[in-house]
Length: 57
Ligand code: FES
Picture 1 (cartoon, rainbow, N blue to C red):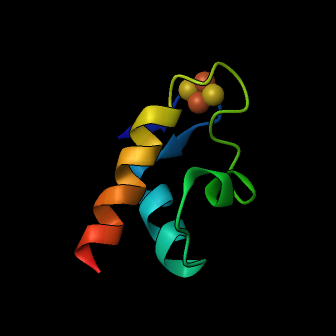
Picture 2: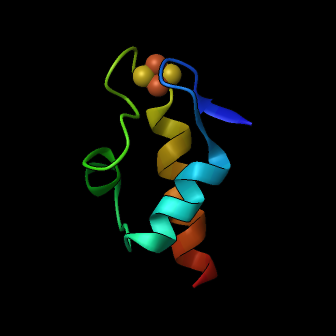
């Protein structure tokens, strides 16, 4: 499922990036993936995905 439609970034891509780069927050994620750099609608969901992965660790 796409989280960021502007840049075609999926939830799977975000989750794998969170693990691979040990991402802790949206700012760290945005250094690697372009989420939120256009309309910004995806930021909330991306943040939620990061939080869920933190809880799962
Ligand atoms: Fe991600 Fe627009 S949906 S910046």
